[in-house]
Length: 345
Image (cartoon, one colour):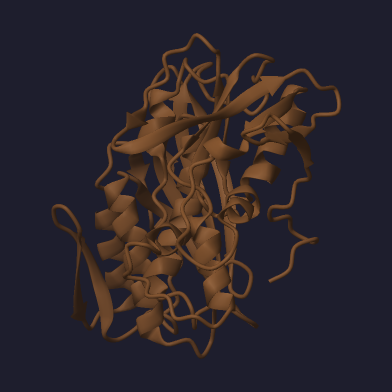
């Protein structure tokens, strides 16, 4: 993981780990000394044989497991704004995006690789705080930072996170396994993150320290729930682009349709606007959406996170989604969540 002296020199934050969080002390370090300190931190994982400092990381994966790989961009002006999101939140959210993908596959996260492009005039304290937010979440999820790259950006901040995980052979959860008659479930509550974003765009002041706004600034990947769904769920996806869009992915990959009960969608009115609209189309919830056979014993909660039945999978060659109200009336749902090249800031 090359760390240029022009970005990481003098009065840099020393990385070391204590239980249960990372301890950061300000010390003058040379580039080589800093890389060595980061290497010692990263080696605290039995899965990592060779980490930061070489051209490639060398990892040990459990016998009988398959490898999961995912990558996600966090782009300034698209996924965050520096005047809205504190750097710790940007780092946290950057890693959470990849961890949520691993959770949706029922996997165990193993290692993270961060490629970070930064404007030349960015404040060093912003970079330090970004790393703090990312590494705090890494420690909580037992993920090692195993490598990456740094570069100068001609524009805003660009962070690309790659996550490597594993799942028992043949047990990874896919989008393609839903069958007619399966029950449709979601974890947690939907729409809060989008409500926070709507409030920020509307000029409202929203504190990142507010518990009410935590799903937006500090999303929690549902790793434990993903593990619990192995052998239980028939299909799964994380809700990063909105329920309507991500359910459409499951329907298309599985060759089915879906009926969603409007009154069953877990949501709350926290900010101005229609909570149903945000729950259906908002995105960035990082909750899990999954299907399971009607006779499956799906727990009501895992690790204190509620699991709610919101509908069922039906036969439909057109892969349509219908919303039903309390009177049984149906209306067609058009996917209206986030889609790059069609969505705007």
